[in-house]
Image (cartoon, rainbow, N blue to C red; front, side, top):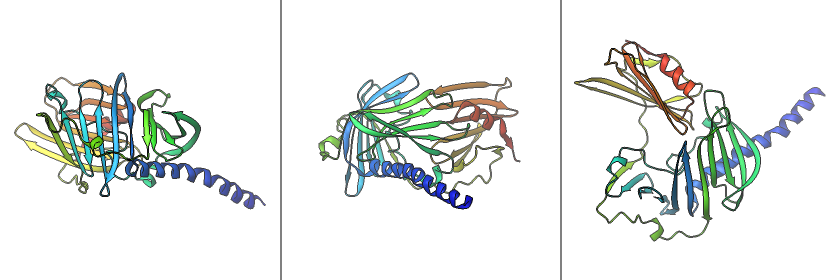
Length: 312
């Protein structure tokens, strides 16, 4: 009888768990395949930007145009694996910054099976965003990671709002649609950047399949990693002024980079900065200067940094 009761309890709990991941799977498809237009807010810490977005598919490829509506009028055109960012005159200092992107649109296919190894998905009720009914799903994990909260359109699965939260519940970063139309045709004109024909600065990137990471020849390595983070990319540069090693790790949702180079100053350096959910920590470790940058809590970054050691 006890065994029968246990089986019944397990069967009753499985659909609820599977349904939340099914909603996330629908979100993954909707972001890529649906047609939609609207405006959204993106807040990182104390900074807030407003963007318009037009998204559609053309010849089987996703095409998306972002236009920043406040500050400098930056436009970002994504066509399949090609990304072009247009900058108006007088904004050359913006070229070195990360290219703006709507949440998850710049990523390849979301690896939900991998994300499920580190995060627990839980339904948190319903709400309304931009006049649309939404399901609310939280993704929580261990103390080495942030919490995520997602508002998914009930009718289509499209992501309407997302938040990255600290362990104390503080909202560190937020994306939220304020106006949105889903499923209606998007004209070719709506996908044409207005700055494309002007004499402006532009930056082009191509997303390609990442090469297999290879840390062979590296002289350092982290002695500790948060559980389930895997090595995604490696780079090593040498020059007349020394060398630099870079490793990029991800758990399928969060990403961080570890940079190591010889320490040049005799005075130990220790600095820390944060923009939204992204921490940057730099500290001298013996004869090494180590920097950790990523969407991880500062405690995680500090432990990573202090674990870096020479291997040869």
